[in-house]
Image (tube, rainbow, N blue to C red):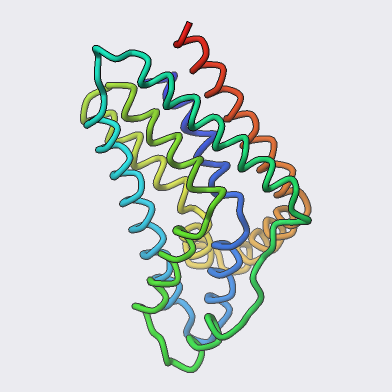
Length: 221
């Protein structure tokens, strides 16, 4: 379990580095009466992440074939290649773009959308997170392949969901527990992600990709 945990932690944290969810949630919280749509947004992000992780774990369990040891190695190679391609795409981009306030968030201020629309916005943030999805998929695949039993698998899956959806629920929790300190922390965090998010995400994607490729090659030998 410790080996799986050592891989899941950095992958889960890396999946949360994109500024999209953090910026959208911060914008929602800044609106008048924004706590309710922010809660819906967090719910949508968590629900979509749960479905993604669960689907990959179930799929991984279904295709696990002890008589075909090369299947898992080839899957490692495929995941590693996808992560390295994602690293190149992130590095080639000028920067990780953070969304500005627009119709998607301004509509909440007028009460035209509500919690359901905010939840849909959260689901969309997960589905369109093209750098986060490979990382979450790689971590969920690791949980499935570890063969730890239902209890440890559930605990690791819950940890992965918590890390992957952190940009949606952490701002909500901070503004609830310590509003002033939370706002300062979120401001500093957002600035740090704007400055160093691309570099950090590139390094983590590339590192994870190299790890999976090397492990796949070792298993094939």
